[in-house]
Length: 470
Image (cartoon, rainbow, N blue to C red; front, side, top):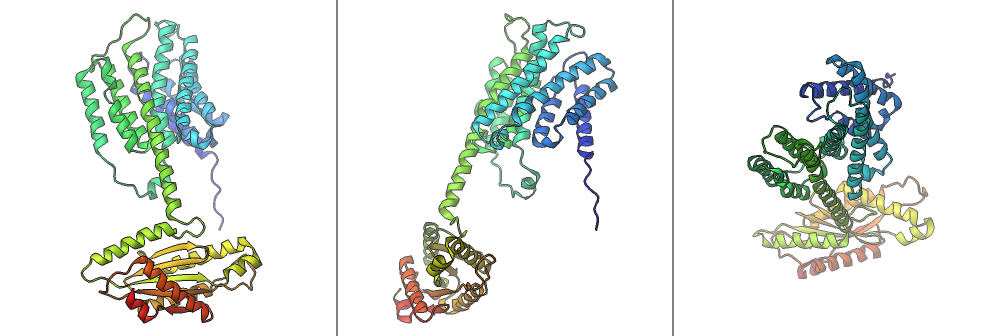
């Protein structure tokens, strides 16, 4: 069948449409004859183009600018300010994109403290460039001084970028969102954050914008960087709106000409979220490191089986829980040894030996059920615990495993190489006392040596006398 090729024009159409919709929304929400209270267009587009850099081409940037101009003209703006001030808006997007696109992925996605600081600096640089360009042409359209115009543009662009760009850069991919199997979210930090925001508005005053900092730090320690970024966006935008509507009775000294209440609040809120973002990044990095260390301590890197230490811990817990039951379930322990593994390494090399170990472990994992423990003790020796099966009944399972190994074929090895396994079994019947793990291993090991003595590639059960004394 012939399928139509993916259109190369469609992403640019989507980019143009997104810019047009965002710009129209920003214009309609903006006070008449005033700069926007909250202009998300530039920050959203910078984040989108950093996540999808294929559209960050001269054509893509030109379409963004044309969409902004079209939206301004559609809303009744004159063509000269529409062309120039949207060029200022575009400068924010281009500056942030240029400064962040070449960073390593770990920094660009804010998975390191350095990445947070780089994003912070890029947002500040983009706001400075836009503010400086706006000052060059402010006189015909604004009555404020050049200083006031610069501060107004910088404070709005900087605060908006700091609140929006991190949320877009840390957002998980669609596959993670759909198949991530999200964990339950702790509500306490979120409720405390909402309460601190309400207290900020009720209490009022310049210092009230710092009230949510403790709650944001708690959220940063508890939630992922993406969720923390969303909460910071919610908190920051709520405080900006509250200040703009004079709900917090926020005022600043007017000793510095051009500095207004809203400018001061925006800059303070932008700086407020920097600390929690760094904490969230460090906390997430620590969680990832601990998860990797736990995985390395639990899972054998070559075969994917449990490590010896992890097996010992889980097996002892299983035996302890069995001992606490009134009618203890039966249990079987298998010792498995790949036959003539040393000669495989000597004849074919350690690369083939590693392939044998991986193939063997994968074959056994496919045969075992959930709840059955499978571990690598070391070298070519493995162990399996089968809860709920007495040794006599576990012989059928052991034979199935032995045949599965015997039927294996290595794809990149000598076709004459034949893999087999010897298995020794020991365990306890239903209702019997729980043996010590070391005693079980000793009995199964003796049964394994008998299997080797009987020609290998066979299953041996621990002697009845040994099993009774376990």
